[in-house]
Length: 297
Ligand SMILES: *[C@@H]1O[C@H](CO)[C@@H](O)[C@H](O)[C@H]1NC(C)=O
Ligand SMILES: *[C@@H]1O[C@H](CO)[C@@H](O)[C@H](O)[C@H]1NC(C)=O
Ligand SMILES: *[C@@H]1O[C@H](CO)[C@@H](O)[C@H](O)[C@H]1NC(C)=O
Ligand SMILES: *[C@@H]1O[C@H](CO)[C@@H](O)[C@H](O)[C@H]1NC(C)=O
Ligand SMILES: *[C@@H]1O[C@H](CO)[C@@H](O)[C@H](O)[C@H]1NC(C)=O
Ligand SMILES: [Zn+2]
Ligand SMILES: [Zn+2]
Image (cartoon, rainbow, N blue to C red; front, side, top):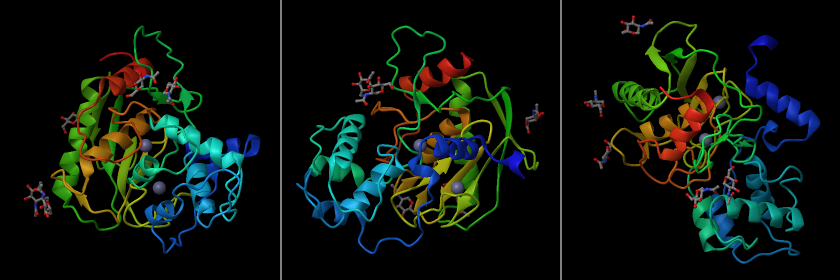
């Protein structure tokens, strides 16, 4: 059903033809036996011109998140492409852009995060000409957005998880309400198959090209408008009380993608890519972003 293919999938295919985009390439499921943070520890201080075990994995990471468009993750040469991608990663995350794996970089890269790339997004074209906005928020390429303001959403069944159903439903209802409060959207929960936005938990290889990776690292992903699919990694230690991985925090972030926002480099934004604790309120940057796309409520 080609017509059912999501905007994002179509986009990835197109991008892949024009310009081989990192994340059209599904990652393999076999997790490396060494945790990525351990790999990074071993790479501490490694720099351009060197060859070291683990550089390939770093290359894969930078590629997955849009900082690098070519190269193979079995290539352990720390070449100029890896160096410049690493500098770009460091700049986006407001670290010193040394092009070397240092302690701050290890710390940042070891955080669990959203599976969406940081750099497929357009720098914000600021369509409404908001003056004085910090402009850290981004949209997907071409700024896809919903063509209506009343959207229904549905919880899809899927894998069993470490958080009860009541808590999941409540958290998502609150997350939808947060976006509704600052935008023209109204959201209604439904059990109807035709729901505009769907969310559910999935384990490993699931219904798309982006398999989940078990506990830690990638927590969730979502597709650009007007697709509406939100997938959470069933293997995380999801919680509703702010400890471990706070479900509402991640739900609020993924919903931002469903509505058309990409990753922000504003460290206060819900739309920044890393999970570093509970964040259940939108920042000014998130609000500026959604309002630049749709206007105010
Ligand atoms: C943060 O994002 C804005 C808007 O896309 C961009 O102009 C700026 O260069 C980015 N800063 C860094 C450090 O990536
Ligand atoms: C489910 O989670 C909610 C919210 O944390 C809690 O109030 C409720 O008691 C839990 N229900 C069960 C059956 O554990
Ligand atoms: C939204 O849901 C509420 C409560 O379930 C219902 O009363 C209302 O009719 C729904 N709105 C629309 C437009 O379907
Ligand atoms: C949150 O809930 C989990 C699981 O029920 C529990 O182990 C943990 O101690 C709770 N954390 C807080 C801060 O209440
Ligand atoms: C983006 O966010 C950072 C940190 O939150 C801030 O210092 C910066 O001024 C913002 N604006 C741009 C365009 O990067
Ligand atoms: Zn994200
Ligand atoms: Zn998925």
